[in-house]
Image (cartoon, rainbow, N blue to C red; front, side, top):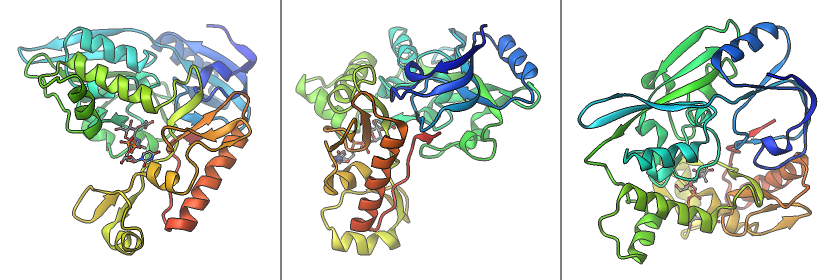
Length: 337
Ligand code: EPU
């Protein structure tokens, strides 16, 4: 463990934004994490995982603690299921590939999502018809205040669409150190209901896909639509898809009958923000080094040297224009720091 001062976070955030941490330390075990928390009780702290869901708009005037806990293992199994535990600092995609290599099912639709395992419960990541809550069992966390360990069971996490207790009632109080998932060993529930996956598999005439085939299809789709952060800084979907009551949606839909939407309950619909942003004319638009991705309007990108403030300005312009045209508010999904 080495404490560093005025540390550049450029390679620690997938947007590739230049910002400095007043102090920075990487922890490699729960014991190290507890020590750092105890020794810095009164200092301002900022917890950094994979840096894939944040936009840095300023330097961080705090001790940045980078969670670099590694390791994954099988902790229990029966005839049909296996319980696997991953430490928080493992790359999510590498973890997913490891489960697929073992022929464990449940996470394949979430291949290639950037970020680390420890942050996946915070916003209940999801893609192509799957969310981590479908396979999540529990996570271990350390209370920042008193360094006590706590297990959060699935029911306690209050998972919703890109939501959990960690973004709400216990926000900034705990650091997730490991996560347990329950996966299938046989009778895998292959889920190819999402149109894009079905189309990708149909291209190969694959009517009986394996976990690996589904993962490869998802990887191909993501690579065709979503920029690789190593080549073009980004944070995945910058905005959430807005959820609107059917009552409010009716007059909007009457005015814009071509608007796409999905029923999500008796009373609510979800509208794809990417569609709204594209219709508002922003898809592929560039403002200096900040812009809206050409293949997926939900994604804001950094062409090289954009500042966080410049990306933020584009996001506000997008939000305002979408609101002026459609009367729909779209909220950021990424954390704006
Ligand atoms: N659309 C457009 N223009 C665009 C983008 C999308 O018209 O530029 C339309 C598409 O034609 C489609 C609809 O919007 O009808 C939905 O698009 P897509 O299937 O690509 O999914 P999304 O709603 O844009 C969400 C997640 C993604 C996830 C995909 C696939 C959110 C905020 N985003 O995107 O998650 O990969 O579904 O499941 O829910 C992420 O969170 O970082 C992320 C990439």
